[in-house]
Length: 391
Image (cartoon, rainbow, N blue to C red; front, side, top):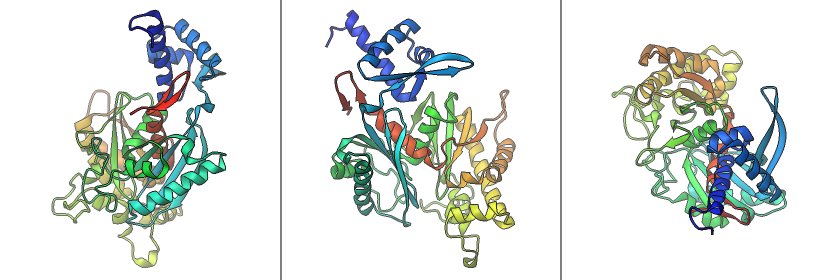
């Protein structure tokens, strides 16, 4: 290692800044790299040439605003990571290279109230099968990111609130999966990771602060400040699904009464229909609404109104620039989001700059999986001679 303050040490630090910026953003032009790292364009150009020759970076010519530019990314051959997302009813898995290009992915349905032991055994097998199809093994993965439908305590790696994900509580999920596949694993909530993906490479990329509002079987939010997650002390920041709408309302799974989820979460919406209607999953509700069923469209619109009122409170507290709506119910589009905007306009404090814009997630149902890929990459250390995983 070079002595601190030496020219070699400074060059090593500058190389590291460029690599970290590319890990964070995926692909950037040399001009964008200069802006994100604070280095001069000449310094960036020289380091990019050096690391490209070393096989660490890949460059290509692109066109930005009618001008030719050099687009820079990490070299794909540096390795693969996996992103995994457990929803309440579905499992998404994606394998990606270090440029975040998906090379293999799959989705599977899940039973309600699935348990960690059986599901982690199944996941270990699926990861091995996906990697074998790519000519490798699960042991070749650099790291795995995992999104769960519950808040995760950043200190313990466990579900932070009892009752929100039965069958997974009191378990260090990252450690249990790591035991099965012998690879580093990093876990966070689905809302946080959906927010991370949208902030890094999606709808929230240019926003200084944003909220990723995940609406589906459950309801939660990921809070982004200056491109980074705000988790709170115990990882519970953004649990908008458990904001009280009516203190005398129905009992929620968190043991409180009248939470937003009891009025706008998937089970609450499906329970409004008789058994003969065949509403078993949110996808059934969405299909009926798309087919023009008035009752289904009204149920989704009412959910949007409730969610909008809770979002107004969140805006008054957090004051975000942008609200990105994702999750299964977000596929309803304007049937959901138009009532949300109306409630926000009625209930949120006004400002000179107006209210936050409400937009759909860029990556649909894969946003959380892409966020899981992002946290896996955040822990991968890329060096000219070695690729390792940071603690």
